[in-house]
Image (cartoon, rainbow, N blue to C red; front, side, top):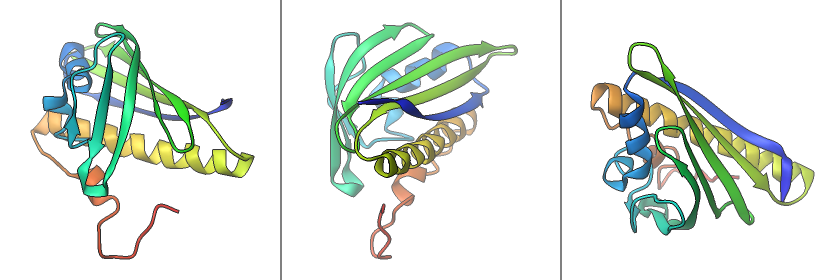
Length: 157
């Protein structure tokens, strides 16, 4: 695992920290802006499966740490092996929450790792933008689903 290169995305969500934290642990909410299906909610020590049905992709997620309204740490099947994803939630005045996502542990050649980190940064940016639209305005933008629409010959490479 390469721990030197990390993908990072950050965004202010203008909602209370408990609401933002719940959006990542409760799949009934998370499916509104990220994956389409989950085998359960995130809880310390639990393993769940997340699915993106539009792409025929799933990943197993092991919850390594949960600090209520502060931090989530998971290990998942990433691009080429196990990776870590950490969310840090910081309260901001007037009931806002600053969310920082860090993905690390990429595998492969230096070029492959850089490519994975760039893709991950973009993906987590879409994730946070979709979360912001959903929580702040009640709008489902379908950013993740529409990032790679079928029938256009567009690939992730």
